[in-house]
Image (cartoon, rainbow, N blue to C red):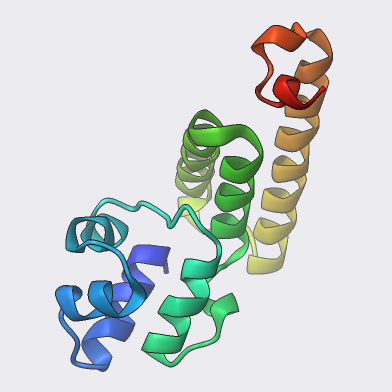
Length: 139
């Protein structure tokens, strides 16, 4: 189940409206609706904790391997990194749709590809001039 589907399921179980939950966690209705309907993820990690508290679930339930990867990519590489990670997850999910791999094997493949993604991003830093790197203002 994807992040937005989990939110919607838990919210309806608690008989909350999107507006109620958005207000309770401190985001706009539009932002919250984008989580459920557009497959977007919170930008700030602490929002997962607020959502979990309001929905009566464990934060880890909301923050699965894929969402953690997307969140981490966004934190390290900005909106472009987040978009690339979301695209990678979507494409890989489509590849796994046939159901031939066990859950454990699927998780292992996802973890290996996520590691490869971050390794490539780090390698690319070596070849990017400092003036174009996000972290160059701190050098």
